[in-house]
Image 1 (cartoon, rainbow, N blue to C red):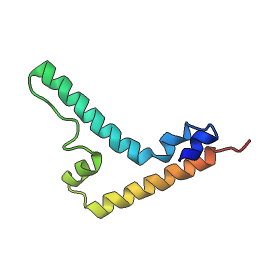
Image 2 (image 1 turned 60 degrees about the horizontal axis):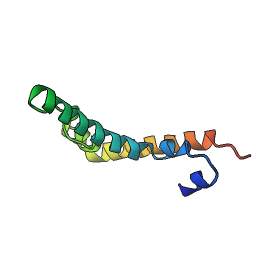
Image 3 (image 1 turned 120 degrees about the horizontal axis):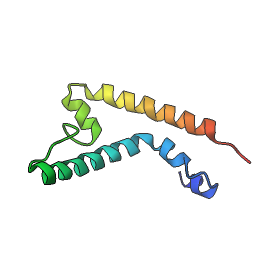
Length: 89
């Protein structure tokens, strides 16, 4: 992915790393919301059962191979989208 910076296409980075970005954002959202509700209501509330979102799906009852397969599919689709938007000058 360093080639995105070298060719000045930094906006491709979120699409290439979409799954990793979603995992990171789920942890950040959970933490910020928990701290906010603890301060406001006296007890922390949660958005997800457990961050990161892959363990949230496991706690919902999805089998791990199914989750990993779907994450692979999403990652491949994000890669295709980023390659489709990539234009060489």
